[in-house]
Length: 365
Image (cartoon, rainbow, N blue to C red; front, side):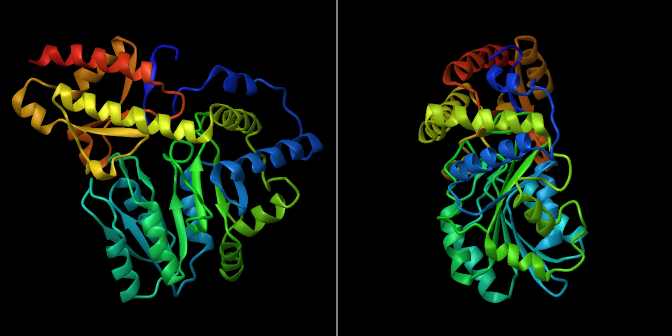
């Protein structure tokens, strides 16, 4: 990695081979050259996501697909169950509400996982059209039990929408095995390509439901996107450079071995947590559900022991040494910071970073 080394939680460091793909000359997005790019990328994405479902390409951030789900999957007289254990679970619920939908947010304390039994109870007590889940809650560094929750949702025969924004490519996500109707993620996290593109897989029953929903608009309309996708096109101008970049990034994942990549993320994340605790910090979420793509570090207890500790000064000192860490997010912004290990972060990178962090922390003792 080039310095400054990014240990952020997206955007992340982009491999030189991937960056080079973005320097290709442009061409018409209504040409056969584009259709070949589109088709090849879709096939690679299906392999990565382990799905036979339709793949749709959005010129937006992942929040665009959140909004698309609100616009396409819920009728005015239907209800949505949004599972939340952090900032992005709450945001998903807010997006449905801002689109005029009837929403129940099933909340857990930040740092605690959404649990299958609680989901089962909620689905047994009322009728819902859609259940949403944040697989990897980026704000708290927590990874929810996807397979266990998916089994519950399948039992109740409800549309299942899963945000895999900070897990796809860094954790094992089997879309078809989990029966996920809409699974989505952005380009700028574990796939380590620049931002501005989002991807979703969408099941036939989700597409069928979208046909029944009125007033879906144009830009985020699943039906319109599907119609263009059938021709290996998008309805609006796609981000061609990012598509080349993502295609190359997926190639690199399979060159390393998909299982090897997910295992690397898991091992590095555990190593970071172990070393962080040795330094004297704590892990913010329940470690039984700790993310394997980032670590959310708590410092409230550390600050009691070392009252001079200032997370902003610490981050600035680390930046001077060439290491960019991520600040906390949302209501825990002032008591946490985050260390990303998404994409191209290797064990030697985190070892070097943590050695420097250990030295920086000494200045507060």
